[in-house]
Length: 118
Length: 113
Image (cartoon, rainbow over all chains, first blue to last red):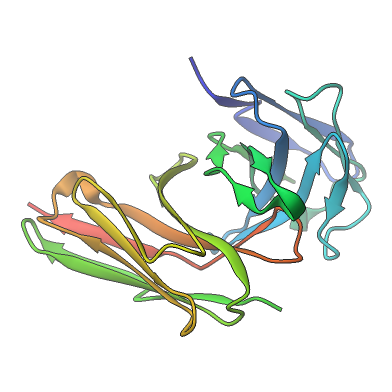
């Protein structure tokens, strides 16, 4: 009865390929996120998305694009993969309410997708 | 720009010891601060969330405090157990930064039997 689920768990691919990682949450949250954890275990936000706006961390290359078919899904599509894209990618969700998002419920994370680009 | 630092980076203690993990942040204009644990090969599990108007939160053997004016939070773990071994991360949600969290680098905790 997983709250936030990601697929695949492991993804090995070659440079230049295009790949997608899927994420689904069954918590009824209105906001979903993608995070990248590099080899030094540092977590960095990539995107924040709800049905009203997409916020992009300015350091994210435009080869990365989130796609949300509905409120419960936020997939991550990556074009022209590079060696430096190898990392663990985490999806997360939360409920945001109040003016300017003054309340944010605890984030719930998926178990991650380990991407290896060769 | 918000920067979050966690000290120490790694900690090894014998079972039963009480311990404190530290988190500091540079921009005190935050909505909330959250503590997570991450087990190897797993995602993050939320432990405690402190809203900016609160000073502490407790859950079982865990107590987290927040001093917004000084940019500090501590996570206190009482009577540590080997099952507490994991990486502990703190993250802050800054005002005017959408709904995104900024994470510290984590403290890797090992509790020895």
